[in-house]
Amino acid sequence: MPKPDHMNLKTAWGKLTNWERWHYNVKYALLSPVWLWYSLRAGSFYFFTPANPTLTFGGFEGGPKGEIYDLLPQELIPRSIYVDAAWTMPQVEAALQEAGLHYPVAVKPLVGMMGLLFRKVDNEAQLALYHHTVPVPYIIQELVTYPLEVSVFYYRQPGRPRGTITGFVRKEALEVVGDGAKTLEELIEELSGRPGFYAEEWKAKHRARLHEVLPAGEVFKLSWVANLSRGARLVSLAHEIDEDLLALFDRISHAARHLYYGRYDIKCASVADLKKGKQFTILEFNGTGAEPHHVYGNGNTFMQAARILAQHWGALASIARYHHRLGTPYKSLREGLRFTRRANRHIRKLKALDKTLPVFD
Image 1 (cartoon, rainbow, N blue to C red):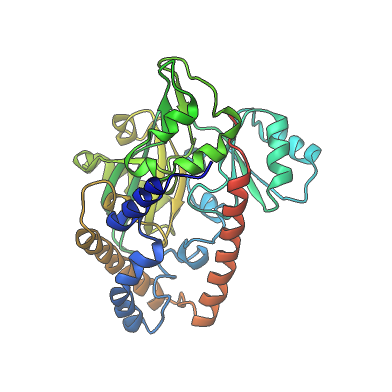
Image 2: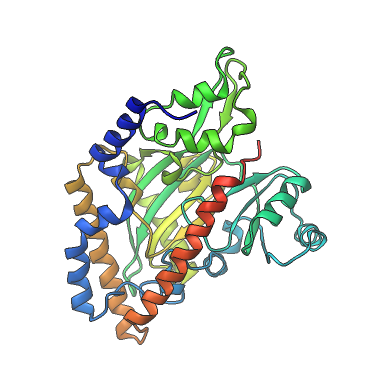
């Protein structure tokens, strides 16, 4: 059923007046003078690429997640296997057994972003549907069930023992709570604020259950991934940044050796446990393309957010210059354009597939 005109106008007005909803290209076009300044200083538009010197484009969008997992301490990441799209299902199941992975598991593309095609898979039939639908290499991981998901933005100047934590946020995945009267579709339509902008997407993904009435108090997860672009809510934990937290990420940075700049996405039992270095798992590390999540959801104006982003780019440029002086080259314009075009084609493919593949409830 088409949306009424007033609903379309409301959505359009919300996107226009809320800078957090502006298209990526619009936001960053307004910040382009800052980017150009650092590009001119470096003599390369891709001034950032040496920052994490062993990662593809420094860990920018479009690089494989596997090269990041290889650097992180193995005891801190989920047990994982990498699946080729050409494998048969018996090969996939054999790899699962060999790795000691059991359902439910998490699956996601080896090269991806924004939570696209992340799914919780409960059985072989669901995995077979995913495998036959997604024509790209993907990762199967143990499902991390710690109750709290957080992001930590950290960078460290090479040669220095200590780094800086600029942002610490709690991430709340999108969910609705039943009242014993409303259908799932009605509960989704009642979402407001940022989550409300994604109502149509979640109705499409949960179309098989839209007419179910959820029992009172039942929590229904619309997504298992707490990603900003999937409507997740971000809550500042800036008041929790302290010496214990910084010491933990200093240790991780030194152990990983080549990860100097980026955002850690983590699940943990509690903030207190995370600070003690126990009961937590690093879900992902996002390198030079990572946004500081703390610019969102904190009531920042666009100018305030722009100032935070510019400060981060300054640190990024400084780290990259250091590694460049040691011999890590900046990527050329030709290399960068080729990489960007390839990454954009891949992400467009993932977005199209993500719209058609249902969320497994």
